[in-house]
Length: 79
Image (tube, rainbow, N blue to C red):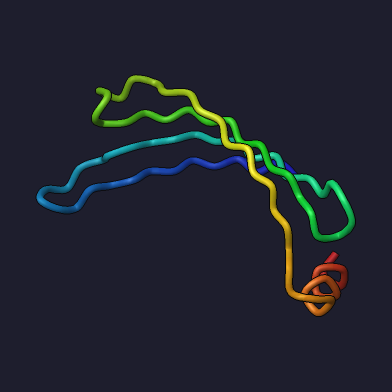
């Protein structure tokens, strides 16, 4: 699955200001059985502390769902 995200983070104290804006594209895929997934998410962030200069980054994640067959049955029924 591909998910596109646009995030804004604001600081509210001591004054209100935009702290960071980031653009991210997440790719998530089931890799083994029905309970193991991988995710890769390249992003570009624009931080106030860096004068909103672009800062590239990437996230890699491994997700394992634990908890028995009840959760897996719900997942299968919703597809």
